[in-house]
Length: 303
Ligand code: SAM
Image (cartoon, rainbow, N blue to C red; front, side):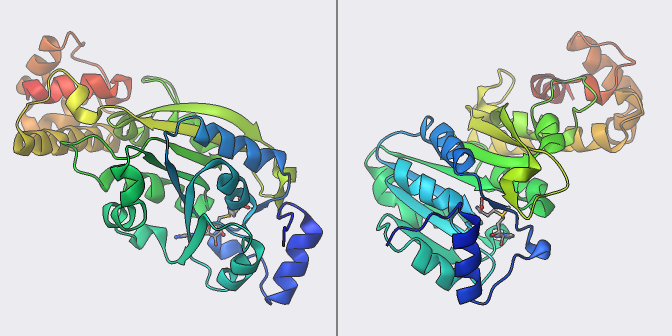
């Protein structure tokens, strides 16, 4: 049987049948305008290869899952809310390319999960990506978990990450270095992926409507730290260099108001930092928030 999972009445009836209600504590704002999940699924699919697999974080009542099922060869969704699992079983019963796993995405071993569910797809030269209308209370932990799940000395085994996030967060993720929205999360993600904001989604497209405007972002992994010219060639050295760059970013943004020389002085010594900045062609009084991911890599190579 086919369910229109963006139809508020259908969703309410299914929720009544399974005695569940939307939970604020799980960040549940379900999409109720079919044009939105369709656009998200198509944007994600435009980055996929063939055969194609996608992991969905938080299928909720299945609105986005249904659209992903139309676009991808396989969808594996991870849902934290146990009460939604039987509902999803019925709502998505018509799709034999969808499976739903109950669990906390933040506790998932992502490389093992990809191996378990998609090894035939990757083995056949296909791609896997991640797509979600994210629960906003864990946006940064989810994104950082994905970034940290894979060995930095190898390319990330993901073709895309397509996420609905709060507009304010989308601005931060896609901010250019030196702008007001630029922060440690921007620089950390830029080490591994290119980010662009695709479109905005107003609160009326959700049930219940969130208090803020949302936006869809596309994050496409690039070569990672190995793509920066200063990165060493040896695998062990790459991992060490990656930690060093991340540590620099954390120190720089931990003391955002300080100049980089002062923020890094305890770790590296003022004179050394000033000299390294000079070698990078950067001013001695520059603040960390002006440095791009590439600048942080260059600086790390001189420290
Ligand atoms: N995908 C649905 C949609 O677009 O209508 C629901 C999106 S809703 C914003 C977020 C979903 O993520 C909810 O179903 C919520 O229960 C689920 N969720 C929250 N925390 C989670 C976690 N740690 N792991 C997996 N799913 C989670």
